[in-house]
Length: 344
Ligand code: PHE
Image 1: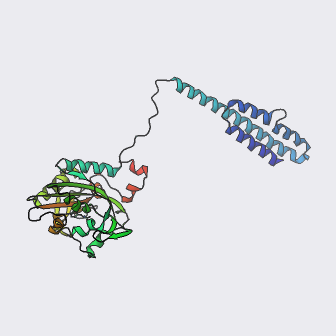
Image 2: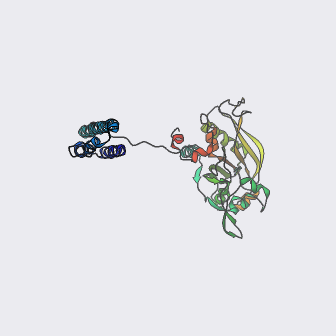
Image 3: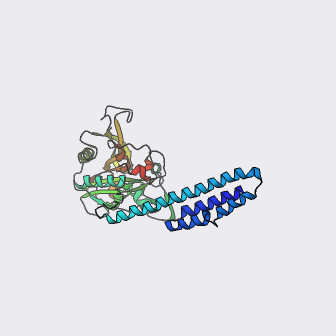
């Protein structure tokens, strides 16, 4: 008997809550509480129970009745209220429309636009070269002899495809320097190229993502010297990071530049004094150097007549170094987490 009452209650409640039409509520009420209603009939059965059970079951039946009645009136109120609101909304033509959420460009896209703008200002042109590239352009033509151990520094993804006798294997560009010789082969001197592209390396941790972006500059012409490189670095550092930031170059080694440098920028927090974040006051930004004569040769350019400089830095890296932006885990940039991306 108790079970039957509970069943009646549950069925009634599900009917009540599922309907959107106040008229149906009237019918449901009749169906359960009317003269021939399910609950009414069940209550009649109580008299047949043994004396000692009647009181308890009677109380339960009452409770079920109460619940059904209350739920019906609450639902009725809700449905009629809703109607009321939507009606008034329809009538109030002065109400502003619901605005769709406004998105914005991804943090990295914003940085790429800003970097492009800065370099275009001093005459650089954006170019694009293949992301799926021959080993030849990524390494061989950049003066890496075959099987040279320095190739390992670039932790490259190779693609399982037939190799080409001259071009070698196919790979995902591990750096934007693969555009250097392609640019030289266009034979349009002087060159002022800005190549911003996706790069791929076998690495993934808080400060590395397997796909990231680099921006590469290549300037080539008559009498191009280290002074031009330094002037360009200074201009970029001041424009992108702010007037107070300074840079320095340290001797380094790259196969494709001679001499080669690593470029450091003063920390945005302590401005070079040294703090918890940067330790020594300087943050490493990336590589640069004067284009190696062998690379010019691969590009079909006479190294006696022309010289050039190149630099290549990580977009995500300069973004992190910019004042005010601190990202604990770089991988968050590509996680599609809106809570994170909406902050910028
Ligand atoms: N391609 C180098 C890198 O990925 C950076 C670089 C570019 C160095 C141009 C010198 C000149 O680390």
